[in-house]
Image (cartoon, rainbow, N blue to C red; front, top):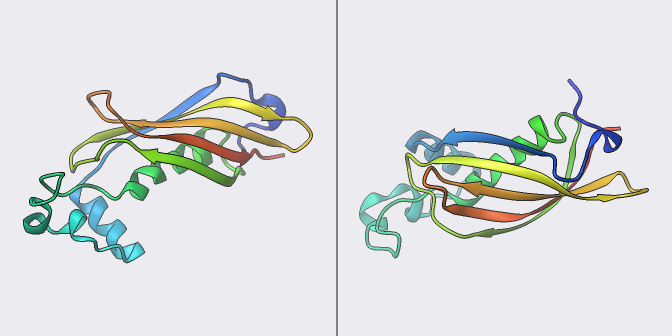
Length: 138
């Protein structure tokens, strides 16, 4: 498998990936990363927070953006160089998150592109937004 090359990419090109976030996803992420913040894994503690219950890790949501870039656009062979992002709303267990990337800039001579990255929930609320910089496969 090989992703799209610099020459094959066009401004405005988009791709997306969608996943429903489960309690298992959150616990596995906590175990892999060591981030056992009670906001994610302890209902009794988290119900007293501003979110009134457990929420998914922000970086778990950001990982869905990585899936779009590495599998769909540009796809396999892509080198992820950087990501600016802002978490704009909580992701709750059971939310279906759509991660989308759109080509917004091609940097000639450097084999680099910038993509607008957005994650929305099933209600259409933006939960994450930012800009990724990648090198597509040659």
